[in-house]
Amino acid sequence: MNFPVEEFRKIETPFYYYDKKVFDNTLQAIQASLSEHPNYHLHYAIKANANVDVLKEIQKAGFGVDAVSGGEIQQALDAGFDANKIVYAGVGKADWEINLGLDAGIFCFNVESEPELQIINELAGAKGKVAKVCFRINPNVGAHTHANITTGLAENKFGIAMEDMELAIREAQELSNIEFIGLHFHIGSQILEMGDFEALCARINELQDRLEQEGIVVKNINVGGGLGIAYDDPDGKPIPDFEAYFDTYARNLRLREGQHVHFELGRAIVGQMGSLITKVLYVKKCHVKQFCIVDAGMSDLIRPALYDAHHEIQNITSEASERETYDVVGPICESSDVFGKDENLPSCDRGDLIAIRSAGAYGEIMACQYNCRKLPKGYLF
Ligand SMILES: *Cc1c(COP(=O)(O)O)cnc(C)c1O
Image 1 (tube, helix red, strand yellow):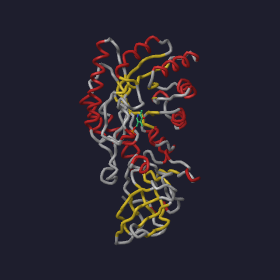
Image 2 (cartoon, helix red, strand yellow):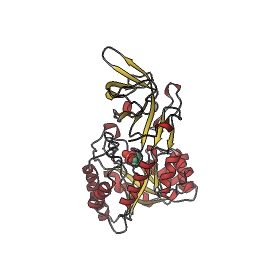
Image 3 (cartoon, helix red, strand yellow):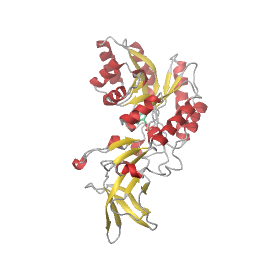
Image 4 (cartoon, helix red, strand yellow):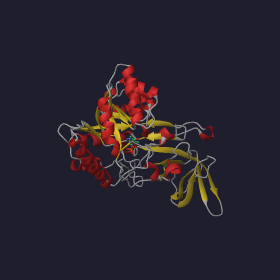
């Protein structure tokens, strides 16, 4: 991958670089796969990256938004997304957030508990509105991913237990300010095995059969997101296999007449087009190790410290022919502030630019000011 290094030299490091070309190609690949399925609808999981320039591209591509907070609903509205394409999940929706969703007229609330249903009914009633709701069902389907990002197991805090599904729907049907419009699922993130999504489809088929016997009509099935990206090969696999992903659902999910399927992809849309660009401050040699100390830290990109994630690391300015082994670390006062151990890189010098790849998702948005640091900015070009 050739980075526009000359441009980078004019920007204060560390910063996020969003590659417009890779991004456009990714959005086009999704549109191409989706065009084969007119009843499929994509809601971008805005929590992955809420950079305004990034959002505008996704909005222009015609997708909706999956929000998990009032702030995200507002950010989506500000970026020009159609309220009728916004879905809103979360186990702890505050009253002001529900009111914001009601006032904006979002497509639906993905309800995660019975008490939440009651409050939405009350708040909608006070406004003389009817809130459309899907129930988020915990399908007790495991995903082959990191334990911190699996969400569909019975022990996770998300969703309503399968056993309580009928009861919740019956209750919703009795409430005068609630319209039940479907079911919602989301089993986890960074999932690369299509078998995990097949297992979800099998579970949904089972639940649909149960509901059909009870005469309950489900208009919408929201299968969530979770499609992963190739962190180990950003250049070889810049675009996730959307074709295989949507085909998995087409082959395995048994739909009823007129049903719509909703997807909530985040990482797969924005992950590979982003890199965190950082500058080498010092190369420090110790007896057992050699450290490449860069000006970005876990406050800018927390995934390695939080999830044990590994992002490819490249020295994008070194012209050295020999390679050396470094632990690439940040300046933060935490031992977990490490981007990579034993990284084999062209010899690094003060001032070299380093690209930490596949950082478009859960990067800039998770940055914090720990150690009173400045937040990194994101640039799309
Ligand atoms: C985080 C999240 C997503 C998106 O997950 P990705 O792995 O980024 O695709 C989708 N739906 C819900 C409810 C989420 O919380």
